[in-house]
Amino acid sequence: MKRREVELSLTHPAADALAVYLSDTLGVGVSMDDPAALARLVQRGGWEAEDLIQAEDAGEEVRLRFYAAPEQNVDHIVQQIKLELDNLARAGVAVGSGDIRMREVDEEDWAHAWKAYYTPMAVGQRLWIQPVWDESETPTGRIRIWMDPGMAFGTGSHPTTRLCLEVLDRQVKGGETVLDIGTGSGILSVAAVLLGAEQALGVDIDSTAVTVAQKNSLLNGVESMTNFQVGVCEDARGPADIVVANIGANVIMDILSCVRERMKENGLFIASGIIRSRQEEVCSAFVQHGLQLENVLEDGDWVALTARRRDGS
View 1 (cartoon, rainbow, N blue to C red):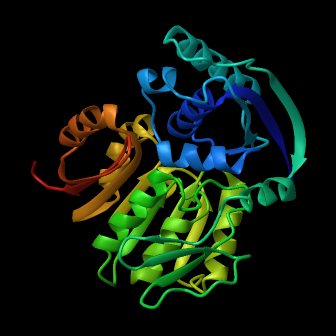
View 2: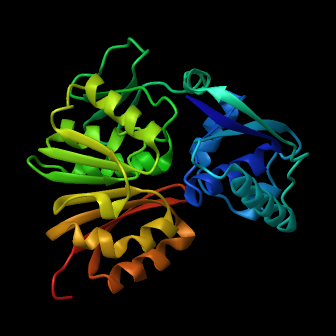
């Protein structure tokens, strides 16, 4: 399957900020031609204009890429990117040339881009995320999750995904049913089952993501306990003990009514992809939908919020 590759030439600070925007607002994953730069992007997470203005690498440029599915409106996404770059420039951030190039690429080209920087990592107290091409030993006492992200978003290396995995590590005790909205690579569903959940259902609007998630469930031998389908929250069956969504503040607030309907009484909702500056806004929306905030987990400028359904509230 072919996808449209959109490549931009930007300064490192602008690339960092735009990557956050693509992930949080548009739900798009990115890659870079400089593995060290991508590692810095993953570590930095969110952005503040003051930090970006003062960045030492503000004069250097890097090529930032994202890959659009056939059903996505690339022209609209590019227009949104241009508006965001204008916002950065008005905030005093050096953007660079801002050149934009587009071409069609095969799925294999994108799959190879991950291998430059995707290495094994420990997450939480129990998990060990390992790319399928890596042959290193799994540390004693860790649960290994084989991952081959292909063209789907979600390797475990981005702060928002790590936060969700850490919460699942803490909350999954055994026997739960899990609903994973915006499943991407399927990593959260697979992790939940390996941690002891009885069943996990993942939904995603991207058919390629669903295919990748199914492949990763097979890699980990949990295909009988996971199910992935193209769709949105409304298409998912319930109720679930745990609902998890790593999809950004705007989408999370839009789907709260649906999320609550698909949670068991006293069930948990794990919401991530949220920049710290929007935490209060999302928490207020929780209250309006009968969800009580229980925990906030932070990683840089990102937060994961855990809330419980309280009937009669």
